[in-house]
Length: 320
Length: 297
Image 1 (cartoon, each protein chain N blue to C red):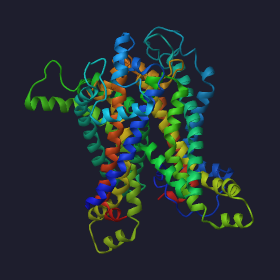
Image 2 (image 1 turned 60 degrees about the vertical axis):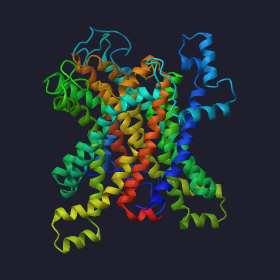
Image 3 (image 1 turned 180 degrees about the vertical axis):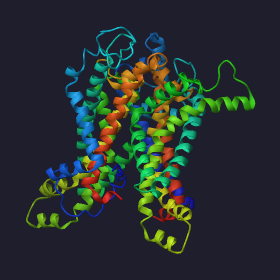
Image 4 (image 1 turned 90 degrees about the vertical axis):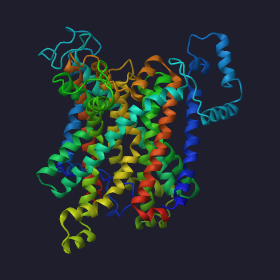
């Protein structure tokens, strides 16, 4: 892929990221109450507030404060959590792997199974498997992730004990090596499936619609006329169908993460969702603001990755 | 026949058959003939009835403790009671009302902002278009859910704030739909005809172009209303709901602590959320089938 395209795309990211920093800054300043109190908690003394004001330059004019804020963020300084007493970046950073594990597993599951189911539905266009899948995807798309999680816990974990209800590992018997890995996988299964379900519904519908359209085109008719087996025909068509699918998956990263956060709360998965909930309860504003900023930047990054994937799938894009 | 799919490409300007009448009597009639449209209308009418008659349907005040705590569904409490002995049917009925009112308010605001931004961008073109589209792209990448989380956490929970945050972040999709429609419509003969008859620019935009650009907006708004309901439920589930109003997410949040002992507390509020989202999605799909037939395979 021409690196010029990549560079140009990355250059477009800068204004967006800058906009997000300004948005964050505005929210901090518009919030009711003294920012020093918001940053330092309600029970600090005057000297501590004065220290915070000086440290964050809160006594300076706004444009200068914005500059200070931006330079702090650029140095990776998002403030200090007043519950954990450590830097926001460190606290959030140690929760990221668990969330990534959950999100990426669910994304892989929903993409692979969604493409397969969508192809299945399109091949059986308007007959029983298609109709069944349609109803299932409509329901799947309408179900809130946390409710599906609660139902899964009720049906599979509490009643039967087949799956663990909470956490990432067995607290009484953590194990090491392969046993640890199997334990994590066992805990991962339900939350990942639940999180995948919503996206699965959307991917299936997109692939089905796209394939039905693609299968009516001339190139598919030509492929069939020269006697290609149906499986291969579908594979040809799928490559074109993947374009909108990749776009939609990429544009839904934010929604996907919010679903992950809720599922984590249901299953007590030790990722960002748990951190978000505990920070909400403790009013740990630096963590909340840091999370919003990092998640926004993550969404931008995901959009770039999507566009690059899109350009890779469709050579025409690179030359526009 | 549930074979309809929302046209995900409704943002692209396409050749329409001619100036269409916005949702007319015929439109409604045709809606009833599509399977999804009928299902959507029936579902939404049912939920609207529940929301409007919440005071009548609910056996009691949703905040009043009226029965034994954690009672399984009985004749007196068809959906059971929660940990404080509050009747769950009352909670679900009032919660449905909250969800639908919020969805309605956000939809109106989102539709207004989206139509204004999209129409200005598409109609004026040039630099204004460029600037508005950059703004649209920016708002589009801001994660709505997490923005709502910090706004509610910092400014305090409240339905009014939530409606404002969601409206201010949900319009980009609508704006893009409107812009695409306006761009395609302003080239068309009937617009030129109106212009050559001496109609002013504003008049042509308001009287000729916009009414014909509205059908896909109606579809987009009903689908975005569904996502508003989901977001509110998720936020209340995290404990960020308006403390003065019963909402379905609040009930689900409460259920989480009693999942092992009271299945009914989790099942009924969640089902109401799913039904509302399903109803709006079906309605959107049905409208889509009737209003932009070109979008369906």
